[in-house]
Length: 306
Image (cartoon, rainbow, N blue to C red; front, side):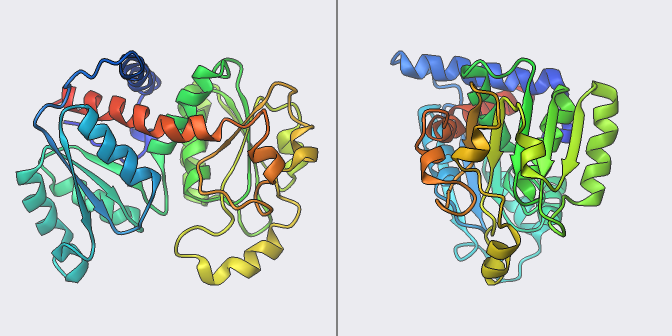
């Protein structure tokens, strides 16, 4: 049995297997064929953080695979009212076939997985967002941007940045990360990613200059400057991130055929301009749809490992 907590636990071959499986299932769906890969199976979806894309993609995905997604907010279960994580994990995993958790502390996810009898999927923590990177890479494959990758991440050194670092380190491509001073990536995550990169041949570059990061890049991506739980820092962050907007001028410094990615929700006029988000290089809505297909590939793959 395998869990999916972070990409660092997976080999390059396994990541590509999941993507290929997701692409196969997507092709089947688009041709009108829905195979019941997870017939009569139940996914428990625990949300301590709310979400649009995560809930819809997992719930719709389970339905399309012949199973059922069960939505559980922290207001609905005892986990939000003092029950130990290990007790909740043992109970829910005895009744369901798979669990997806979207929460704050990564340590909570790890503890749940330790006591779970079934695969646990990270739907997002403050440290990592690996399912989003599966969708991002699937989108890159479909747009012929999965060879000779030079990716530029502009913005906060957050869970998305950490996940991009792990994907680049595992797959062996070049990733340039531009963050403002004092908003750099976590030092421990950086050390882990750099150790993996030494083995794979990946190139991880850290800078405080968006222009240095974007120059000639084939993929440009960003994220909101203030994530959920950082609302009190919003004004301070808007000031600190001045100059880090991905606008038409910055995109012009990338490769002329570069694509733009964003995990959404996007705040136009802050981390990205309206022109870039709605422009011809933007594939953000294909990327959003691919959350559905990549996660279906992941769930079927995890089920096959049991």
